[in-house]
Length: 121
Image (cartoon, rainbow, N blue to C red; front, side, top):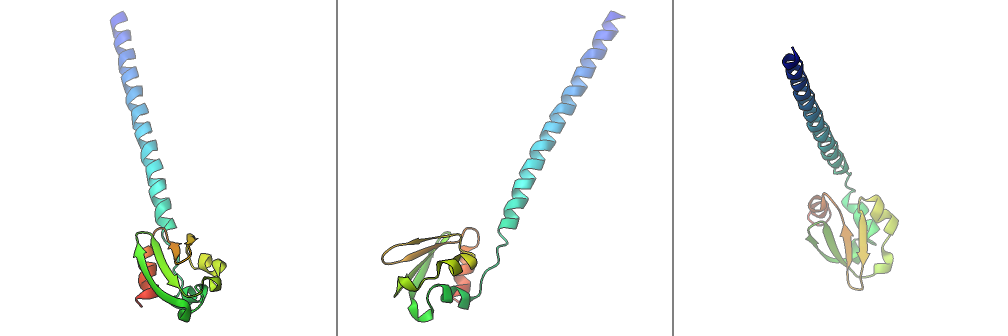
């Protein structure tokens, strides 16, 4: 009789352990899915029109040339005082770095698409 009781307890511990591991794995999967879905939503930042970008950069006549490096768009301008920083932010640029001879626009997830829309359209 005592042997049967101990056997039952071992089975119960095994079942509880399996359920606990299952719940832990399920929680980890849920956390990973929330992070992945959150990133996908962040990528759907609307891209401004070509004219809006050029307006923020001081007009098309202020533009000299540009290039893209990863998530950054490097723009050379004639007059950097014509830059409208608020319009650049509204156009979907997450950050920018001003240097004496260039302006670097940081566009996190869709830099290639933004670059193509502005400079190759």
